[in-house]
Amino acid sequence: MKATTETNKSTQNNTIYDVIISGAGPVGLLLACELALAKCSVLIMEKAEHPNSPLKQMPFGIRGLSAPAIEALYRRGLLEELEIHKRLKNPHQNAVQGPRRQVGHFAGIPFHEGDIDTSQWKYRLPSSTQTSLISEMEELETALARRAEALGAEIKRGHAITGFHQTADTVTVLSGNQSFPGKWLVGCDGARSVVRKSGGFDFTGTEPEFTGYSAKIDIADPEKLSPGRNVTERGMYLQSQPGYVVIQDFDGGAFHNSDKPITLQQVQEVLRRISNTDVTIRALHFATTWTDRARQATTYRNGRVLLAGDAAHIHAPLGGQGLNLGLGDAMNLGWKLAATIQGKAPDSLIDSYYAERHPIGAQVLDWSRAQVAIMKPSPEARALYAIVRDLVNTRDGATYFAGRVWGVNTHYNLNSEHPLAGGSVPNFELENGVTIGELMHDGRGILLDFDGNASIQTLASEYGSRIKYVSGKAKKQLGLSAVLIRPDGIVAWAADGEPDCSELQKAAARWFVSN
Image (cartoon, rainbow, N blue to C red; front, side, top):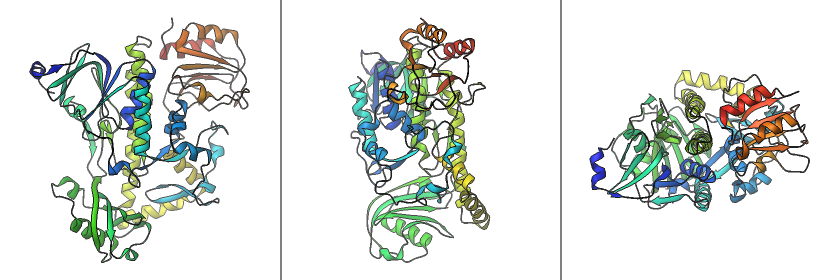
């Protein structure tokens, strides 16, 4: 951590922000939206002068959004601001039609729409959002930045955080010769997070098996490469469209970890070796490397400093899990941090962020490691690959893998006997046509009462504006009589029959402070 003497040389800014966020990627921007929606003052500090980057644009900027991320955007009215909202209304546009349409993969092994038994997902309704959508990083960041600024968040680009120091009540963030005081600091600054490194967080895990390459190239003889994903005896290459290639070279991450520049000759040598061809690259326009290094912070909080997104966990970008994991962090943390700042939550609420999100992150890291294990160019890996492929091609197997990849089965352990508690609230459509997702645009908790129970209404009134009471029948109620919904859309309590108001009171007191 930077020494406090540096502050004496700095230009002190007078505004004390509720939260300072390091990093204006999707995670930092969504977190800022959540905090600003709750009327917190937010400063986002981003080291890059401009938000544009080849990695954020097509095709490298293409990312898959899973069910929890789609639900989060929908519940805040953000899907309507994205091009992906049009694909939500017409999800099969520009897609190959039919029951064998590929809708995901595990280590390159595809699973198909017609093989998935959605009846196993009891709490997904006809009014639910899509389980997966294709998005573009640049568009997503633009929409989130626009929303964050509209809500009052301030974004300073070209302001890299160089250090910070904290007291019991504040965190002073340093950027060059300037300092910015805040009540909390959240590191959303990626895999090489300055906040994580300066904050003394342990970052443990496993070392890489491969160096990955993403490159835009001109190929003299493209017919020598097969289209799509190709697993070979030496690695994998993917040609998503002419001139764009992704390569996995199982070198233990040696090239990525070296200081060698990425040259045309280097990319050509690796591509030739992996593809077992003499393909010729005429020009190299853009290239970057990455690995499957998998690490996770052992805690997400140190005093008034928190981590989210890649700053808290890194892994191979196989199956697009990283963006979704980070957006889940932001959605979980935002309302909790805002409620803590404003005294609208129990003191223990902020610690539930780590308790809930760290296990989810650990699961995703293991999911990534498992994919790498069966992609290795070895006889043992090929044998495992064949067995997993057979499992994926069964109905139960495809349903399991789809549920994991799409996040449908994401669940927090809230120590409740009801199976819905800790899961995402179904998108109930009330008889007037309004859905729960639409009612969540303001970021408040909801007590949904299907039966107009006077005791439940009285309890909701004890929490004032912190819990919105909604009464009315739904078109499909799934046998439920009442549901308490947290601001992030997670069910805190649910009842099938006559509600136990004492249990409801305990659940409400756990997540909200009454008047």
